[in-house]
Amino acid sequence: MHNLPQIPSSEITPKDLFLSRRKFLRGLGLGAGALALAACGLPGSEATPTSAPAQPAATSGGSAPSASANTDELGDPLTEYDAVTGFNNYYEFTTDKERVARMAADFPTSPWQVQVGGLVNNPGVFDIDDLLKFPIAERIYRLRCVEAWSMVIPWMGFQLSELLKKVEPTSQAKYVRFESIYDPDKMPGQHSSWYEWPYVEGLRLDEAMHPLTLMATGLYGEQLPAQNGAPLRLVVPWKYGFKSIKAIVKIDLVEEQPTSLWMAAAPREYGFYANVNPDVSHPRWSQRTERRIGELGRRETLPFNGYAEQVASLYEGMDLRSNY
Ligand SMILES: Nc1nc2c(c(=O)[nH]1)N[C@H]1C(S)=C(S)[C@@H](COP(=O)(O)O)O[C@H]1N2
Ligand SMILES: [Mo]
Image (tube, rainbow, N blue to C red; front, side, top):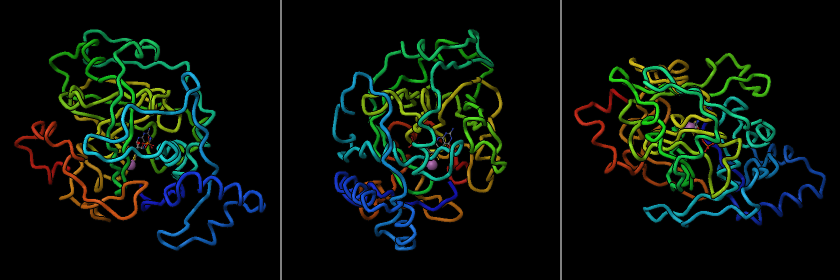
């Protein structure tokens, strides 16, 4: 996340051209790396076609990835499947966004269990198959990374509120703490001591109960690809992308505000709330505008990532400049 936004090769040319150029390069016996070197430092040009196209994850039925609509509710087009699944932040594997898909390809996401406990009346260990029995629906959401790029992604999933109602938080519970899997043998990035593993995130209980807050189990009508956080990841569309924690194995209801991985790693940069806010700059860049992956140029960043009408009331009376 400390890297400046990179341009994925897949957005520079239409997909078919991008793929045929790769074939062409392979035909020449040119490692992609050679070309990346040649292109290095030319902003916005033919930058970094460094990796093979991501392998699509197991499809549910062999059909092509598809969504129920072509745009989000603001009329903006969905980000291409190849970009959604080929340009990822997942530091457990690597900080190189275009290598995550390949490195995660063999990561086992089944069987999978999620332990839900803490301040609840009905703690339990849930099999991913149990969780898939909650009503699963498609949600087309904008994802705004703190690095100032964004996508529009057709997720599949269930509302976190469904799971929370089932375990019944006690009246003491004020926050939800989420933990990702810890498996350094299979996740080489977890050998990095820059971060305190496992990845941890948190929400206030009312944020967690909000109907927009999704537990994603799929995208583009398919099972969630490993690189996107399979088999279960959080999606909180009005917050910066890093809040949307991947590969969740543990959820605890707690009384105190949890310390996330990013709060511990860079306390000056990342606060607990991390609501998308064009008025609060990152210490090293403005958050006023963003680059929508697949588009040239930049667009204005919207308060709460365009979900203010639904969520601003959660923060009434709070100073969102100091509670960033
Ligand atoms: N466990 C875990 N979750 C994570 C991350 C990570 O490195 N590890 N990166 C976050 C960041 S910074 C972003 S922008 C999104 C990216 O999600 P995507 O790859 O599905 O687009 O995942 C978030 N969740
Ligand atoms: Mo991010």
